[in-house]
Image (tube, rainbow, N blue to C red; front, side):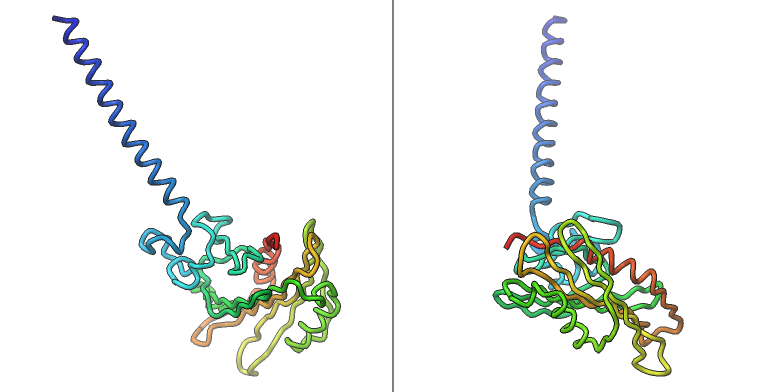
Length: 231
């Protein structure tokens, strides 16, 4: 009798364990499927409640739900020409895309500091002038009415040209700070990007204090993270 009871007990454990294993396998499969989905393919309810994922057009550029750095996710251009860090509180504003070039505009608003960040980046490929940094910098200076010099920052895979311009659009308003420049790929010819980041006090802000050094750190974090795809 004891043998029969023991046998039944062992059989029950085996069945219970088998069911648990099947449930775990189902859960793992579900998790893997969720990870494989891109944010644009997911239900917004299942995504973080931040502009980068809740705004439909912005969501199309997000590579995954993985946080690359605190408050930053990975963006990929429509042409798959470049990737860069993207702030969670930023969202798509506008874009222009052709077969070889792509412009992307996005904005963010920091509720704590009342500072608005307006960003524009333009990606170039297969254009002869891209390999001439001096020409590119002349073009960028002309667009932004900038007459100063550019700092050159070198990394393993790219050259970054960087400058800061202070702009007073209205004598009664606090100044805006514009960070502008150019990124050139070292790995491939005729591949690069121009950029502009403008930080301004919100028009409705009662209090706003600009911190150019902190703004500069944000800009350099993003542009240093830029990688170009194999075109």
